[in-house]
Length: 356
Image (cartoon, rainbow, N blue to C red; front, side, top):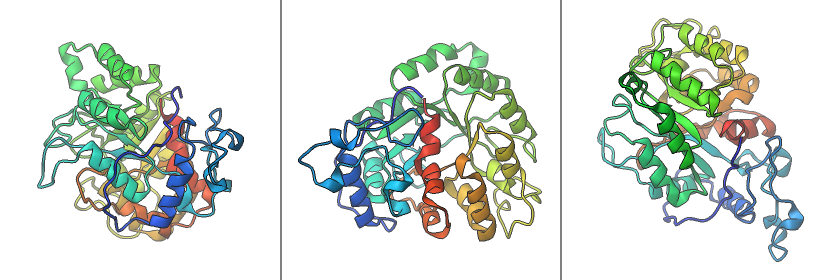
C-alpha cells in the first residue's frame, strides 16, 4: 500500500437523520477521528501507524486526542470502530425511477450513518447501469472530498479488442488519484481475454479489483470454475467479489444463478463461496447490495459461523446508489455476535490493507 487513507475532516452536512444512525456513537467517533486530522492512515495495518497521543493538540480534551491508529482495544462497542464502505456510487442522472446522487449527498449520507471513508465505484460499461458513471468523472467529483472518498476506476475489457491502450488510460487514472479497480461490470465472461489483460495490469500496479458477477456481467458457469482459475492465475491481485453470481454460491445445493430464485431457505451445506475463501487468500467478499443481504440473512446460524470463520476476508459495503436507499447491512452489526477484533477486520482493516 502506498498512499495512506486520508485523515478525516468535516465537510458540509445537512441536518437529516437516518433510521440507521446512532447519533451518540457516531458523534463520539467523529470527534475521535476529527481530533487527529492530518494524522495519516486509518490505523491497525502492519507498517502503518497514526499519530501518537503526545503529538495531538495539547489543548484538546483528553477523549479527543486518541491516535487515529484505532484498534479493538481502544473502543468498547462495535459502532465505535472506524467504518469504511468499500462500495458506494454517485450518479449524474436519474435512472430506474431513482434520483441522481451527488457527491455531496453521498458524504451527507456517510455522516448520517457513521461511515468514515468510502470507495466510490465507477460504472463504465453499458450493462452496469442505465446511466454510466465514467472513471474520469468519478475522479473529478471525488476531488472535492478527497479526505473522505477514494475513487475506483475501470476499463471495459471489450475496448481492448479495438486497440485501446489500457496501460496509458489506467496510469492516467492512477496519476489522478485512483485507489482501486472497480466496479468491473461488463457483459463478458470473468475469464474473457480482455479481462485477463486487465487483471495483469492490476497485478503490476498493486490494484485491488472489485467486480460484479451475475447472469449478465463477468459471467461464469454454476460452481464458479472460471472464478477459481482466475484466482489461481493471479495470486498478486486482491479480488473483491460482489453480486448474485457470487453470493448464490454460499449454498452447496444451488441449482441456478437466477436472482429470483437464488436465495431461499436455510443453508444445508456450504457452497463454493466458503470453499474459495478458504482456498485463496487473495479473495475477499463484498457483503453489499441485495445479493449480499439475501445471502447473509436467510440462515442466521450459517451467517454467524461464516462471519466467525471468514472475517479476515469480508469487507463492508453498501452499494449505496440513490438518495434514501435502504441499506440493511448496518443491521448485521447488531445481529451477528463477533469480538471487536473480527469486526475491525470487516469494518476497515481488510479493505484498507489491500488499497493501493
